[in-house]
Length: 391
Image 1 (tube, rainbow, N blue to C red):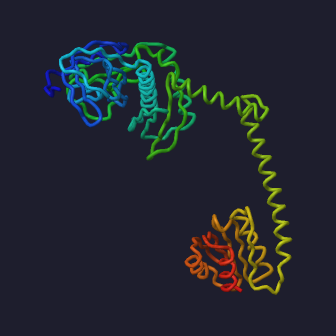
Image 2 (cartoon, rainbow, N blue to C red):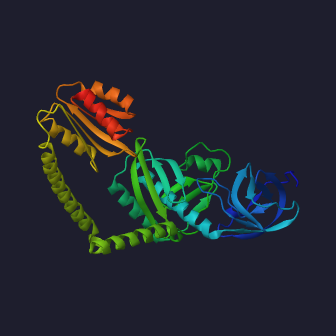
Image 3 (cartoon, rainbow, N blue to C red):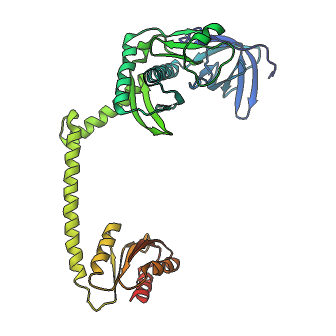
């Protein structure tokens, strides 16, 4: 298989982003580990760049799973070798490409609108399989992004054609456009009307109406600015379909209309909180009854319980300390370990628990007269150690 380089690849995708099938000559094919690196004289396969993932597809019987640009040569990563000098038929996965173009074009519109309205720069951009994330170097609120989303979808409804051109050096000096770095040589400018003008080497829809819809799905503070997540086109529709099914599922479970599920969920939460408070009060009464079974003459009360939360362990110990000098309450099992709360009115319980943790394979601590943590030891050994130390 030849390794010579005859010419740079003719990039057909810049002339026609809808082109999917072509014939080309194999200039080189090099084995590289488990893959083959194939260079053609011409290609419709877009190489990864400009934040946009590479095209996938086939070259003859070989699958193309990645494409990279190496100094003007478009290198196709395939799972089978191709004979140098032969012509091969290529086919781009256009469903995948169009999804990526929808995402990329949607990102342009959103980033441009935010830049124009708020003056923020897009300082980070990732087109993932689940969503697009964009990092802006300034704060944005939910209200800001609602407005941005409306404006972005307005650009879709206008259904206009993006303008892609290569300005001269003099024209470029006078042109206001977004770019993350200083650019040299021919600069490819992509303009989405009044929404955005940006230096970009990626592929975009022929008309904005092809994007279908833009949906901002979330945002968060990030490195002093705002990280925005968004979806465009088919991916936005798929996301809507999933959420619509979830909404109707919750609506059925709560016997509430879809647009009223937030109020229904709040009612369930309120009812749960009321039941939780009632349960806590009931548990307190049960713990008081248990406390009252302890003799006031006892030096250290020790209880092993089941299903108690850390706050319940602490609460029970506080109750016991009203009756006896020291107390320890545990919840768990010999197999899974024991959560503990240990307290004392007259002993240095913090110093005691440090030594107990060493002996009983434990961890935890505290301050004052109360400590909490866990032991990985048998109940009989724990009880013996506690009573020997605190009784």
